Amino acid sequence: MVPVSVVIPNYNGRHFLAGCLPSLAGQSMTDFEIIVVDNGSSDGSLEYLRKEYPQVRVISWPENRGFCKAVNAGIKEAVGEYVILLNNDTIPHRKFVEALYRGMEKRPKAFAGTAKMLVADRPEIIDAAGDWYNVLGWAFARGKGREASGYTKPCRVFSCCAGAAIYRKRLFEETGLFDEKHFAYLEDLDICYRANILGYENWFLPAAKVRHVGSGTTGSAHNPFKVRYSARNNIYLVYKNMPLPQRIINTPFLFAGFMLKKLYFSKKGLGKEYEEGLREGRSLGRSASAKKRAASLGKGHFLRYCRIELSLFASLFRRR
Figure 1: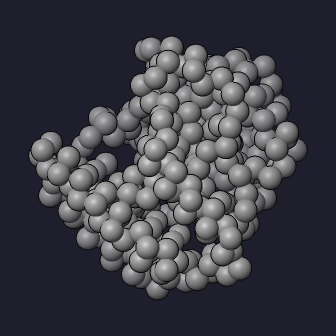
Figure 2: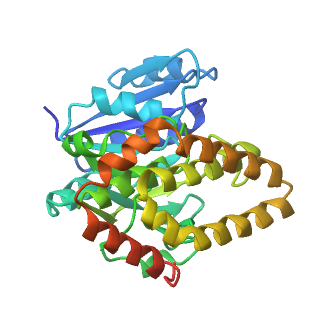
């Protein structure tokens, strides 16, 4: 049995795999497996994998079933004690796998650890150094756009970007796998939120470095698909992870946060998509499955909810 399984979701990313997979082949730690889950690619990705990387395990589907279904399939097939989720539009540093693995081994209470994600064509700039989440309902990447030299120490973060993160596989039995209703976006925040409620930790592990293109599959930072699903999932995760008293306390802040984002996206011509996402998110949040999830997490975790609430307010004042 290998200690680590690397799961890469792929959708029409043959040109990205040609950069990602050679970097994994040259890792300082070699005792790991690679699983590529292909979401119905039509660009020759499967042919490329069969010809150039026959040692890679491939799960292929005839259609795009979304990020969450893809990584869940990979996690279920993984044999490692740890699972690394890695976007296809990344180029890992030589010690990427080793640094994530050793970082988790040093921290027995950690559920997840995130790599130091660098802008692909400007590796001196941070793309993400972990994620924060605040009481306005805003998730944001720590360090984004700043000098990478300022982010050299491991630290606790609220959540880990699933584009380059490691997870302790056995703890998925407690948190559950990635919620497939998300399809894509904020599913990593959601699962790390659940880990926080359960008393586990999420860490930024800067010795693990990876260059990241960003929006490699969807094509741009802001597009109708991303705006709609991000809004939808933002509302949805609030219903699932905040018990009713916490939602009541936070309602004025959440309302303000969502309205400010609505104004922002309206100026970009994406206000309609944002509103549609909010409506869908409320509907999902009021569903029986979401209420069941919220109830199951809410038992016996009062002090943890209090710590999370303090963190949400503190994140209003955090410097990236």
